[in-house]
Length: 74
Image (tube, rainbow, N blue to C red; front, side):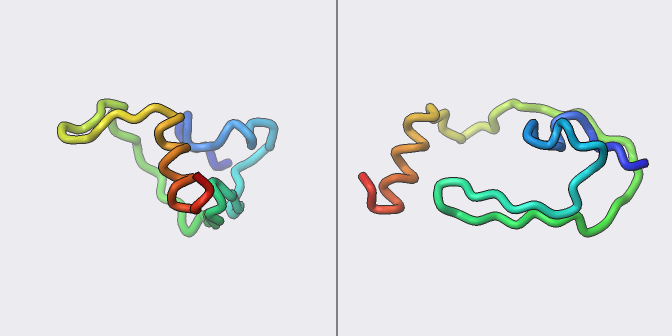
């Protein structure tokens, strides 16, 4: 019985009665293939959402605009 840490599974898979071993997502026109390669049982350490020093905060709109510029749709 494989159980992943909270937040490790996307909300879209919440109804699955298991863990996906491979899935494809397309975000901003970029195709991502995610594959579970191995399983190792160990405790997870503390999880932090603290933004590292030197990183810039960006709004969702700013990030969307950056991707649009990359795709030439702006």
